[in-house]
Length: 199
Image (cartoon, rainbow, N blue to C red):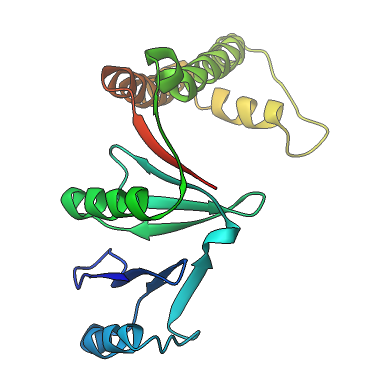
C-alpha cells in the first residue's frame, strides 16, 4: 500500500495504490486525514474514491510538461491523476513502474511530430486568410455577394470579408501568430512520454 496526499488546489487530494487498484479521491481538505486512515484500514468508500483495478488498465502515461499522470483503460477511457509538483509526479510514476507488472517504454517525439497540430492550424489559417482576402478585395471593388444556404463556411468567410481588407489582415495575422508561436514552442522542446504498458 502507498498513499500520497496533497492539499494544494488543482491536485487530487488523495492518490493511493493498494490491492491491485489505483485510487483517487477528493474529500474536503479537513477530511483528508480521516479518509487516509480509512484507506489504511481498507475501508474504501465508493462515494469518496474512484478505484481503477489493474485488470482494467491498459497503460499508465506520464508526459513532460503535463501536470498529471494519465491512466488509460477500456477502449477510449482515461482518468487523470492530477499532481502539479513534478517531483511527486515522478515519485508516483516510479512507484507504479516498480510495483505494477508491465513493460516500461519511453516515446520521444520528433520535431515534426511535436509541431504537427500547430502546423496544420497554420495551413488552415493561411487558406482561410487567402479566401477571405479574395472576397474582401472584390467587395471593396464593388462586387456584392449573398449566401443562399444559411450558415456555412462560405457564409462565415464572407462575413469576415465584409469587415474590410485591413481587418481581415489584422484578424488572420493575430491567428497566424498564435499558431506560429505554438509551433515554434513545440518543436523547440518535443515531448517525452513515459509509458507503462500494464500486463
